[in-house]
Length: 449
Image (cartoon, rainbow, N blue to C red):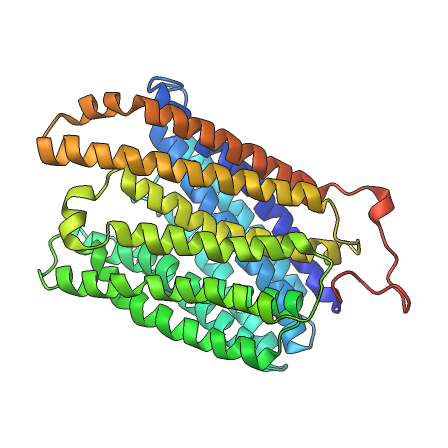
């Protein structure tokens, strides 16, 4: 660790890991409700469990992005963070808002819009925290060295913060409501978050492989161009059946097809950088997570997204377990694994310790990735059967759900593997033996340098 203010990232990472644990446990609980529908139905209804599961996911990923930015921007800009105090204030606002949102959900207070259920005061809190963050990192970059990585990262973070404004727009017209809703949800995860992913991945590969910066930057700009080109008009694949003009069926289908390209480029980029790299970095676990993130993102967001994005297929498959299969693998690969990669890389340096518990960390990777892959296959088969029985034959929804019970049981088993892997990751990242502490000095540099 080169700059004192990078320590801010440590508390963001710890907060993100705590919410990560809550998120996966909430998902496991929701998975069991599919197996036993009346479980906790009066004490903790399924809609509340689901809100906690999805909202915890979004918040901890954002905390991870913010922490990654506070860690890498000083190194890229070659100067301290503009105001560490503002960074801590931002973290407090986000954590208070998170606790407030969960408390509201538990007593039945929520906005009712999926992913955007937060009470109005929480939404304002998130907006204030985002503005504080943008001021802080922008001033840091503008007063220091600028690189392609910081340029792309700032573009992604500015755009995702500005798009949050659409979360406040809730018109009475249902078609307009869903259109603005997708401006947040889609343009976050299939456009602006991709820029953040590409920038963080580029930083990690630059540090872990030793490839020349010029090579990394060329790849980065190509990925960004294809992500924005495909992602913005690719929003149209959500407009098929919500009352918008019919031309969106073709616009959405065509540009959604192109959305595979940036994820294929990111996967190719990661492996080519490792192949070209000259550095034998000590942190093998961080490299595994980086390669795993780009690979699983290609299959989850790219391949599984393409499976049901064309309007002729989506007419039948929309809203089935095929959507759940795509969503789980895409989020895990593109954003969960990426955050865990940067946590694995940064934590040894933030705590001035050698890369530690690497075997446990890599075991957690295979547990979580294997569990998520199996869950995806199970949900894909379940969704295919559901599509045929419910959308083609016309069987009743609940009758079809009863027929899928064996798949839900297998999905729960896969979820249990993911939870075990997540808890193992948290342990391997946070708990360190005394023997692994190092004392940085002229002859004993900090890990990763």
